Image 1: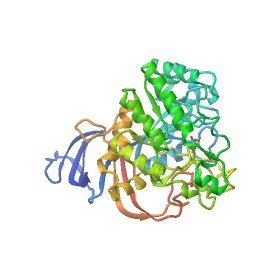
Image 2: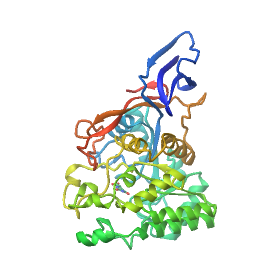
Image 3: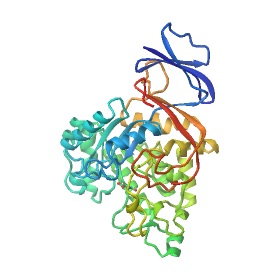
Image 4: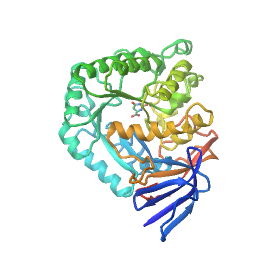
Length: 420
Ligand code: DOR
């Protein structure tokens, strides 16, 4: 079955896209692709054409915390946010440190979203994320995990980190490394600096993130193995990653839209909605991260989608849980950077699709013949307000809640099927 989407904008050029079943056949200047005789045609109305994104770092909360999010609601948010594949972290209850939990997650995803978005579980690096005993890597891989991580609970032991890098590599899995020196960062609520001093709040110093990144990059170099640094929040960590890359270490890294758009000043007025791990840093850190996604020092964007209920979030800063709901908002927020000429449009393809596909070995759509027909259409002008009704995620905990934003995902095809 052939289908054609006519008149869509691909990197500012007006094009037509022809696909057959779940594969791209051709993309070319509008009106210039010869169409097969029986072909369903849809007018793309000059919407922006994007390849389906990969989110390599989400928390979907099931099993165990279904009141915050389920695999079904999380994948709904992913679908409507432009994500065709999501990689979910292991800090569920029970923790995803065995094949049973991995299979449970995959089964839930298959039942609720048989046509996608596709779920790729990330196995725990250590049993129960306790940082002591390695998780059964072969079993997790066999059950369908695509990477390993202790996300949420940094690995204090260098020896454990070394062993997990080794075992993961034996099974072709990359370790996603939550870098935070746990002894330097206890009971923190925000970035440590002039502002935390003024507000009288316990801060987390950037050096804790950079120290562990340096440790693990050195380990990766020594072992000649890959390591992927999670949710980079600071300029110092960017410098450490750059240093590692210059030495030829196989280090890759991610950051999130919120570290590019917000800084610690959002916590003025003790605003718990802006509490996240790692914490929002300074304006200078924000600028350094933006340069790093532009020059490739940071390879990919992820949401670190961390849904919580409002009552867990909108409480005193000390008690508020960390994290932001992100799947619904990522495309809108990062398109904002494109609109302001701070990021090129094709950088979105690289940061949200091509590079994560390369790093984690997942198929992506580069609009070449034979590529998967996974793509979405985006209206860059549509105004909307994230709130109870518009967010598909159960997690309404975003610092952008109630603010007028511009740009919305309008339609999404996965495997050649239009899912909305
Ligand atoms: O803000 C965060 N929330 N960062 C993490 O590393 C964990 C996550 C969560 O699970 O809520």
